[in-house]
Image 1 (cartoon, rainbow, N blue to C red):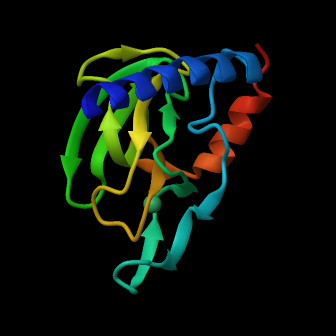
Image 2 (cartoon, rainbow, N blue to C red):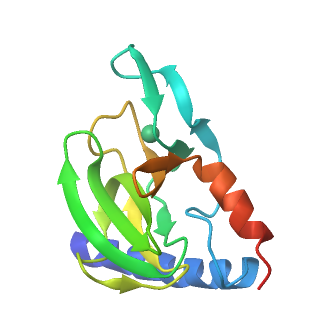
Length: 159
Ligand SMILES: [Zn+2]
């Protein structure tokens, strides 16, 4: 019964969010969460867990069991789990990797194609983290980009 309730909740969330994304934004790209609140920015910082100087290769976004969207059409080239990122998804499109970390649940399988705005995961607190949030990295080849700047650039591209 409990399991059914959870699947039902996920299904409703999935529908709600698909609509929100399509109506609220251009179909060319979608923000990774319904609301973006950055809790840790890109670049040099003191690591919140180790306390050591660190280069943050992405951004952390406030999220508590929230649906996570595919930013663009792409392929889920890597879906797995490691000690740092916890449950993660790497999407690939045109030499760019979109890496989502600390997920509680992934809805896509490795190798699956995803469309813009698709709910690919629920955020969580898996891996090395002080609490629930979504980690997002965007990598072009071996270069990590500032995801906020990248999203801002995407927003400027005409349809
Ligand atoms: Zn992070």
